[in-house]
Image 1 (cartoon, rainbow, N blue to C red):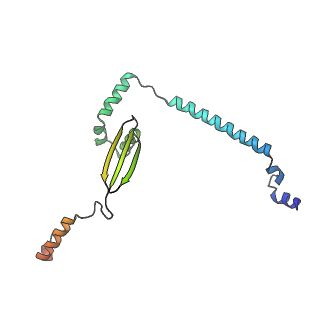
Image 2: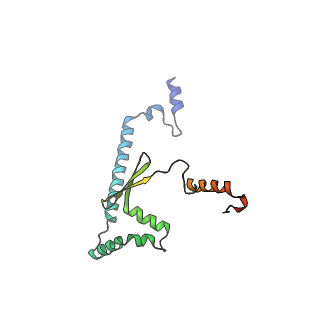
Image 3: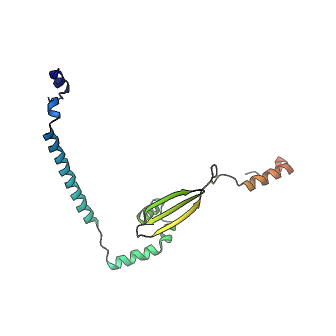
Length: 155
């Protein structure tokens, strides 16, 4: 029976069941992988250090001046949707959303450390930009009772 297990578990390389449970081999492979992770982490740290850009005071002042006129950059006719998204992704670190009753509470965390709180009324089920206001529907119903169909306005 032991011979059958060895034959069954032997792989294409001829390894048998006893070889696959060798703790020394497993430990060696584990240590090799840990060493690979350490080397990759060092390479990543070096790469991040190389990416750090040091701005001159003149460049820093120009960047602040452009930031003060952010609405002009975002509203510019030449700015594409992709460009606007890229600018916002650079400025916003994260947005935290919390639904409270009939409101959506948002907290925008900016990369500079500032926070902006917004509160937006939550739309009800079936309410969207294509829905007609109830006042308009009531008006059309009252006109329909008073006027013939031919005199009703057409879209």
